[in-house]
Length: 341
Ligand code: SER
Image 1 (cartoon, rainbow, N blue to C red):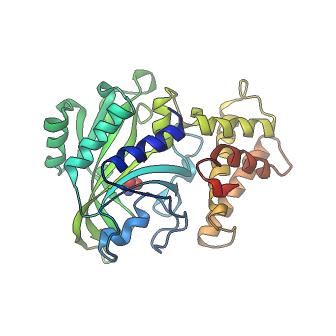
Image 2: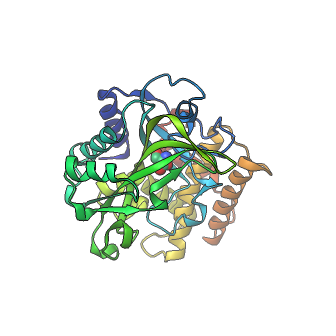
Image 3: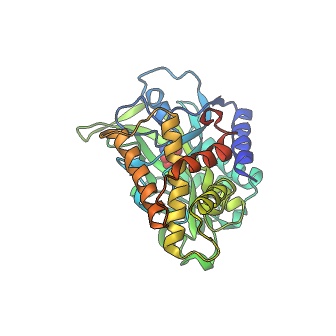
């Protein structure tokens, strides 16, 4: 399956189960507590907290996300891991006071094993240390062997930011095999080996700035399936850089910098990956109306652009190159995001 097939299959699966399909919201959130849209739930926050009535009890979206500033910031990881990106797409299903853990868990399993066709023997799940209920659903209703269910603390408690909706979560991991790291499951094994690709958050509380929490009006569901990571599993490649869309951008970066990928050393590959990633995030941010500046979002955009240009320099390019990368982003992502053109 290619990225576009996964976008379509996910949306169809949840529309068939009564979810209203929502277009991606802007990367510039309405909510002032986060700099960028960092997850599919950001546009849903007013419905989760009860500030506004939810227009639908269930929704599904393919949400553009940027994690490059504030609490959710992956900027320094880019190019050095197999799975971090400043811009990525999050496929999510949401229950706004409607269904809760049972449906979220059983549908996620059905989608992963039956629609995506991932081998159930390679799947592990984690739940929050306190969450007997989620563990019982995974073990007794879905049939995941008890030894492939692990309990984690903070890693299985998701927060939107310093304030906002939060709750215990349950994550689904894929074991890419012993060549990629130590055994022991997600709790103890290698991070490149056990790849987390879907986070199911059982939204129950709102965190306030005085440190207290209050219950949400109704327990809700917020899930996030990382598109690029999932596509890397489906395409049987070791990293997101080898998936169809990012591989095209990496090839464009190699052409524009005249780097021969087959002989490039690791630092050159890191620079090419940074160019591919940063070209996507800067194109998407500018397309949504962010402008380079000295503060807040504009400053983060400026930092990302600067990093991209510095890495082009490191590869020996001393002429403007980002415009060429933008053309590549439009060619690769233009079908899913026509506004880019
Ligand atoms: N909000 C959760 C996350 O970002 C699930 O979508 O991981």
